[in-house]
Length: 209
Image 1 (cartoon, rainbow, N blue to C red):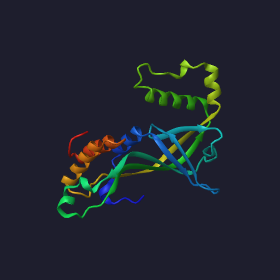
Image 2: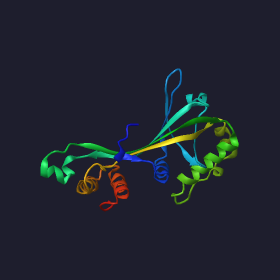
Image 3: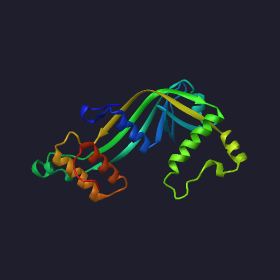
Image 4: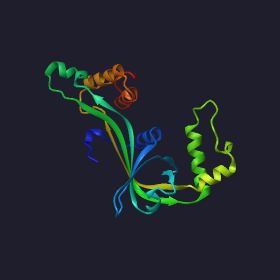
């Protein structure tokens, strides 16, 4: 991934936080017959990324192959009108701010019901946590769960390396960064508040939306 130094992010706690906050990843697996691309949630468990797919998914045949998972964080258009320097010099243009994490590793395909049930319990516990009455897998009939477990296969990415790119106006002076945060908060399009808050947290500048 092309990453100028100003936008590079290598702190594992920051990268893991984005992966947990935005678990729906793009999975890319180069194969001899062509690149397999799928979209699914992954859970970071004991330093490995775990997910599952339908038994008929092409990734079931990708055991042992190198794979790339792309986690997409907040993103949004940045208007040059938000830069104070634009009013002074006019020498500013539009851009796009965003945060992404690329995770490289070897894919393992796991066809074990005990492993799958543990993964589903972990996924359900996390994503149901904010519900007034969190749903549990054992609320469904046992025979129904057994049938569904037979229809899926587990995936585990053994991580080799992680790349992070946080393009958040770090190549601009502080006044411009504050202007972008303010512009995002005022526009308030879907995702703008999250992007502004990430800029605030990363740059330690401005106020949260």
